[in-house]
Length: 450
Image (cartoon, rainbow, N blue to C red; front, side, top):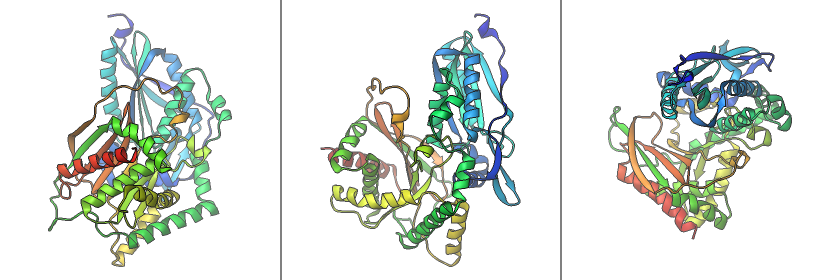
């Protein structure tokens, strides 16, 4: 074992001085995530964004620390604390401060990977102290004096998945020698305080009011149930099965189907999911909560912040032919995207007012989350060689019951494949029905590509 691998683990520190700072109202995204974290309580860490990645061929420690320091200067969200003052959620952006960094030394690449996995679990499984702590945790694992593994965990109040990919892209550029000042002059992107100011403007207030009105209208008129409900109350201790379909065929067919149908691949997948849910429920009307990235401008596309919120996708009637269903989905999908930015606590209050008036709201317990990055073309580097992977359908785990959720599906881009990750209430769907749903979505897209 060489001298570098015998060094003791320690904590370094990133220092920020004279960055942008200030105080203002929280953004819609910050409020939405903060509300969810408060409701989750001890389960809040499951919303943390996490990344553990190898660094090839390795970086000097000073280079890695400099890159992360520049990243903190570049994106205000990484220095933003959320504080409740006089009953209002406020964001406070620190112009000065320090971030601790765990620095570990290991004797081999294999041991470094193991140490990174352990550190990731430690960082990700702890809630953030949002009023007092910056929403970032960082660890570096060295082998022979070079950083070979990076561990990064963000609070969801600082970023969504799209924003984290922007942060990783920028970190790559900074590690190659660029500076925060250079990147800031090359591109225009929104910072959280600017975002909140726009949302509090007359235009922002009109957008919020329109979105909340849209939600109230759809939940007042949509389907009351979408899947057959058993008699009696379901067991509160029941488990939610977790199914994964990994499909290279779906990844190959989806762009062809979208081109033939002259629409986006996201709409094709959404139409396939709506069709299969209708088959399972035995009805023609479908309503999903769809997670929308809300990155519709160049400024928001480049931002590291939490912008994603739920939209409400309502399809009044499935068509007999899939091609026609895809066409029918385009208008409702655009409406869902258009009304996916709003003051979440106020929307919750609106819906509670409807419930208190004995209004029966539509079933909006089905969640569709297409996590594939629509801005992947902005990421550095080429496509490279696509690995060969095999199609696989598996049920790797079960989860505790999720209040307010009957079905949740994530669409994930994997090397050489698309993965559909599905969690479902075992009181409503059996594993065979979950498999039917996932394979049915895949088959519809394969047929549409021909």
